[in-house]
Length: 297
Ligand SMILES: [Zn+2]
Image 1 (tube, helix red, strand yellow):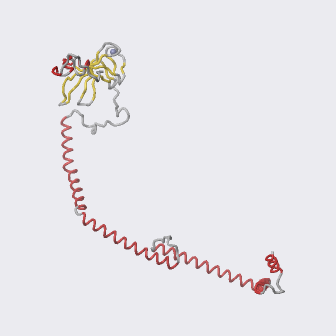
Image 2: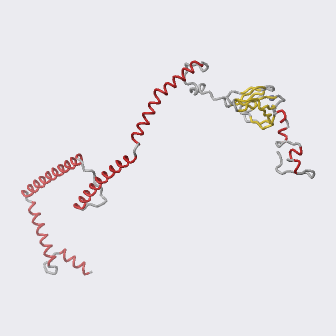
């Protein structure tokens, strides 16, 4: 690594130009020792597993080398670089190149790559690049046919559909003012109906003294029917209950014990009333006497 500080020797003066130039050194230091051959030494990390071609040992992905990087050509305007590395287990050299066309690295000499690319077909999936298995990938006529078919499909099916959709969209969204007006009108009507209903509900609540928090259900035919049925049922029950009571009273008056209990009850009531209206009369019964003694305590 180069130092960050620069040492200016005593014999240096600014007319010499840059310090590197004066000392006869490259700015990249020792890494540029083969720069006259177009080679720069860089740190290169193996992008995949390989077997060294000389010692035949396995070298794992991620092992780093001081590689000689060199531009060897172009793919359109993208430079192709080669990285020449020396095996760390033997003295053999191997070379790896960039492949801009397929966006990958390829081993060109001195080693073998361990093929470990994900193969969807081998793993129960489908190859993503192959959409029509009938056409061999290398058949240019078939490809041309396919592309013209695709173009026709776009022109005859997709474009009209898109245009129709656009027209529909314009038809519905052309004038925002009209839409706004319609919407507000509808809101106003809904609000009015809601308000009327609220007022009617409030009146009903006021008439029957119902709590204001009580929410009344919607008044429709079904609810009305149901309420009517309930009312009918209640009336029938009341009627049958009254009939039963009358029968019981009728039966009771014919028996002997009934009037006795009735008369005794009446007598007791009368006596109680009398004792309450004249609490200090001499003819009070035992119950009132007890009560008075309680009060005296
Ligand atoms: Zn080796």
